[in-house]
Length: 147
Image (cartoon, rainbow, N blue to C red):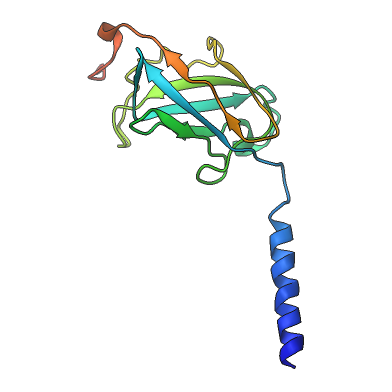
């Protein structure tokens, strides 16, 4: 009876692992963002797939930079990557982790229609070249405009 139970447990475990492969394949994506040559924390890096017919999060994976400017893309869970394909990349420099945070770039790099950053995610582990953003120091928004 113990052998039968162990066999059943193994069958269930193998079946559960098999279920995790359903859906589109995600590939790890890491990179770095610098602003005026310096790594910056709290930059939201938004990838926008050129195939906007993809469902839900698949078309817009996101990452947040750490203190060294490094990020890893997330689609459904932490650092799980992105689907293969062509993307337009946008950036927002968050003033904080709070809900009331503003974009310290003032929207300069947030419009996908004006973005010059285009990336192709390959069906493999993707380590991207650094994104180098340049903005005059006087244009960095340190206080939001009140209306």
